[in-house]
Image 1 (cartoon, rainbow, N blue to C red):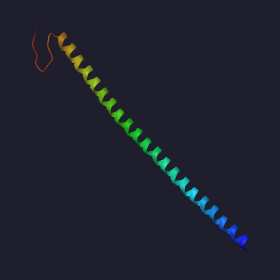
Image 2: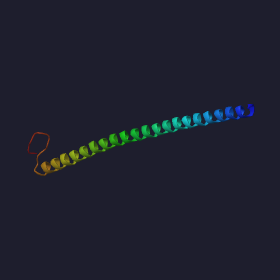
Image 3: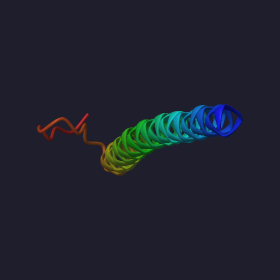
Image 4: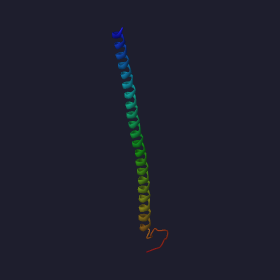
Length: 88
């Protein structure tokens, strides 16, 4: 009978150790998945900021090109463009 009791105790210890390791492994994987998700969200947010910055840069570039075109056109008509028109 004592031999059976020892086997039951060892089986119980091994079984609970395996359960504990399984739970610990699931916690570790959940933390890793959370870290990966958080990093992905940070990268997505960074890309959105970069896209907005590029969009603003593009709009400024277009505005500058239009402004330069107006200045060139007005100079060809002997006028200076800054809200005032005058013949030189």
